[in-house]
Amino acid sequence: MNYLLMIPGPVEMPDEITEAFNGQTIAHYGKEFRDLYIDTVERLSRIMGSEGWSFLIPGSGTTALEAIGANFCRQKKCMILNNGHFGDRIHEIASKYSSRVEQLIFEKGSTYDLEVVDNYLSHGQYDLLWMVHVDTSIGILNPLKEVASIAKKYGTKVFVDAIASSGIEEIKMDQWQISGIANATQKGFSCPAGFGLLTVNKGLVDNIESSEADTWCLNLGTWKKYYNMWNDWHPYPVSLPTNLVKALNKSLELIEKDGIDRRVSMYRDVSARLVRAVKKLGLDLFVPESVSAHGLTAVNTLGKFDASAFTEFLKQKYSIQIGGSLDKNMKSTVFRIGHMSTKQCMNRNLLSVMSGLGTYMSLNNINVDVQEAISALI
Image: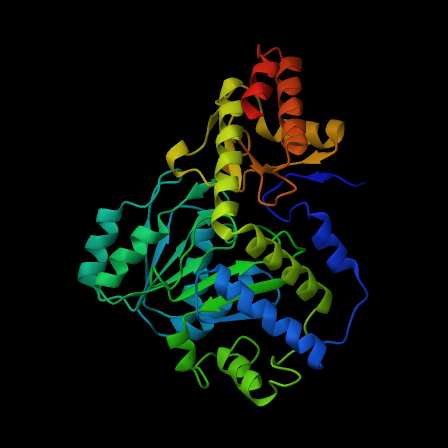
């Protein structure tokens, strides 16, 4: 059964990207593919706002997080900012590589308290700070630029889980002095899952020869070695999924053609319209609108109906999949609508979700004006 994917990744792929992915497989080496690979990593770095290196590591977004841990956390004093499920994850990863990991835990649904962050960094002499830009578990957009500015004062390197924000939210890696950004292919880049993408500050990469990472494949020194040694035909240490590289290259080409600033503005507009529609149905967001992410919307049912029952209704009756909560304590009250790809952001797809939501509420004897909500959306 095929479903319309309105989840926060993997996403509905635009036709151009699907076409690039579905083409004939090509060899993972040789000048033709080498040139495509180099073009892809250079495009990715530009979109991240960096003159640094980007790495396409087969795996998931968590693979890129693991690479940060393996190469930069080992026995370093680390501060993790945590206000959601994926803050828990980076804390677990960092703790595998260092016994000197601390975390600042903020209430779910609340963004980081910047004064608290400043206070801890001013007293702790931390080597690095690691944070989640958008935590999809609660739909929150955390203040990356502001945190990076604080960390800069104390000489603390900043690493970011931007898996759910890259290609969607504003990110200016070099300008904001961010050391490393992990992301993935299946969210804002509108591709199938399969790569952990990692962009690293040029100064850090220049100083990597063979890092202390207790791994071969995730050791960035290994990747740099092959880039230099086999640059003319195979500048990476492992076989790469060539069709996924073709798809990613097409995605990055489309983003650059559109302009990253225009793309960010489009997501903000879609998010604002969807929030208005949700509120017209008498519902609310799980987080304040001022800190709501722009690639997904976490909706709070306010106890009016069971969120998990609604997600199943939408799947069975409308052939649409949306996300439930990742927290067992919120499964009955929170559902998540993904709008991370340009195809998910099409009015017809957003309207299908809102129509299903309005119908479900009406069937459960909740008085709503569906047409008013649809008018707010379009």
